[in-house]
Image 1 (cartoon, rainbow, N blue to C red):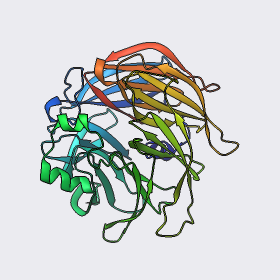
Image 2: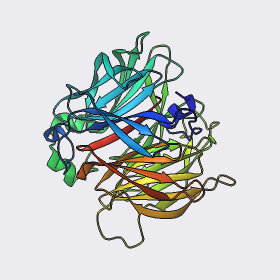
Image 3: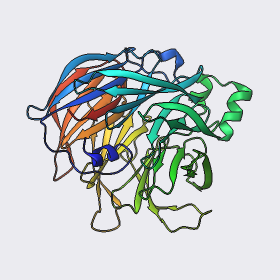
Image 4: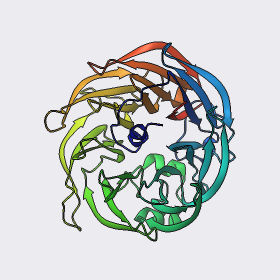
Length: 394
């Protein structure tokens, strides 16, 4: 697998992948709606399915179920060489991080599972400079660090950082109804992304409207909060990415459908946040009255266009990136996801695969390399409650 592409999933605009015309695509699905913090409207799935992407014909071929996944609701995957890390969302108990070996056929072999030390586990990142991975739990606002053994399997939790939401969850035991009515009623950590120099790790907190800045002790796996940046009230920051330039980052704000462009200062004082907001742009059309909550944010592999999935308004917002200037954003268009509730999408060169959770569909688009706009390939595939698309080398 091209290392730069793997880095793209960590929030960087890597180079395009070239070579094989057929690649593997793993799609995970929700399997138990009763255990989720939210309520999908599609049908419950079975686990993780494998597809083959034929780049020449621009079509997907369903290779079948590769894991029924004993833990409910696999909802985030991270590929590192031939190791796949999967976490699962549940609010009735702690999630787990599972390590699989991935074979060329797309087959998965479970190697190890570890308690994630938090609920509704939604993100995992393997530190490239050490044998640790960072795990984010949404429901009770915890960020855990797990030590990995020589084969890449998680073996023990070395550190757990808890936001105030953890105490709230322990005292009040909120249910899904309270969460849906009061999305910012308590802290909700949502992802973890390294800085380009691997000095810091940034964690958006939807409940606190903050991005937290951590340092990792790579000797003992201790995680330390060093600073935070306060964003506008009601933003609800969700996912966070860096441009390959290394000086600019973007955070998608779920609740008010915006993106903040942030400057990264690698030389900031130790106790000062290294991020500062440059501008805020909307991801929806002016005057939109219907509900719309952002989900995924990604840069196209060449870094010239940025894409945001808008759930409920069911669109993909497309921005041109001023790569010759200050990396600010200019809206190019807002196009239909051709489905309901686009929760995630991934690229392979000039193809985009979109997971529309609420109408059980995966849609394949071609991306115009000049304009950034999407063209439907005519190919839609039925997958029950798809929530994540992971592209791996064939």
